[in-house]
Length: 389
Image (cartoon, rainbow, N blue to C red; front, side, top):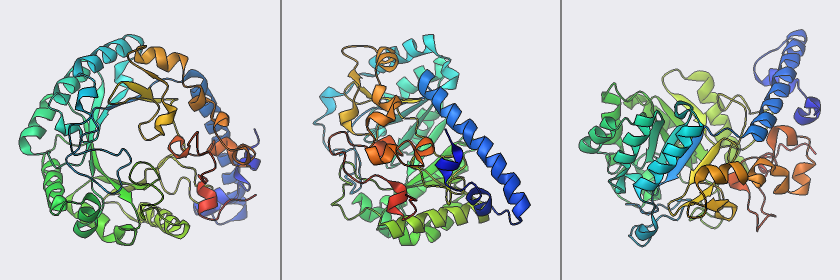
């Protein structure tokens, strides 16, 4: 591994981080080189050992909304309800995982669809908490009233991520529900008002609809007292496909990166970060989030889908499914499958594997890969015009 080849010019890193003198930049470049070598070594060790640290349970595909940008093609009906795993099945898997791992080192995240349409997630969460897991949910907050919050709190919920995709005009348009923004805002006020909810934030999917309104949106969240917001660009999956008219252009993506970098450098009242496991190169990495790019899908992150299928993170193509709970327990699949997640060179394009950024990028996020349509452009650097070839 040659870091100078990965980064092209290590002096770029200290320069964008604000070092001006040549000697200080040289010293900083040496420090960066060591840090990046350590990062690559750490990633290789993670790939070899694949310790589970994050487990998603896609509890349902049912939802009370029908959002334009949904990556899961969630449904406003019960047509998939009969295929949903019973809560007892998940509890048994949590028991088995806790016998092999320290549950205190694993985050158990319940997602959907909209997880709050299921009444039994509170009981499953309480079981997870009793075993020692930290558990949380991602929700559109339309059902997050005081009664449900109290139930989740009693079940030991430790974190909540609330989906809010802009101010009223943008959010309601994407959610196809007039008044949705006001409902979510009320839920956020309840979370802010209760000191118990220290670990919560907002997730905002950034699209062509809201890219030009992010400043006022972040100001609004900060005014409510929301501690953090994760901005993630919409990607081609589910209803948010390339024909949806929602995908950001290269110029708009650069606009998003610049906005996040500026907000992180200037704000103290709210934490703004890019929540997208793609590699954005030396001009942007470490300016747009706390840590360097790393996609742990199938390496540290596993998912049990609503019907018992097992995969990496829930955003990856369903063609990457590694097994089913009817055939083997989760840990059996985790320990004996997942080769394509842990050997990214098997799914990356040849030009990707030959790229100077490969050691740091590894093809970007797994959610961008498609094992069937492998010629789809997934290179973040090429999209923003910063790929040095």
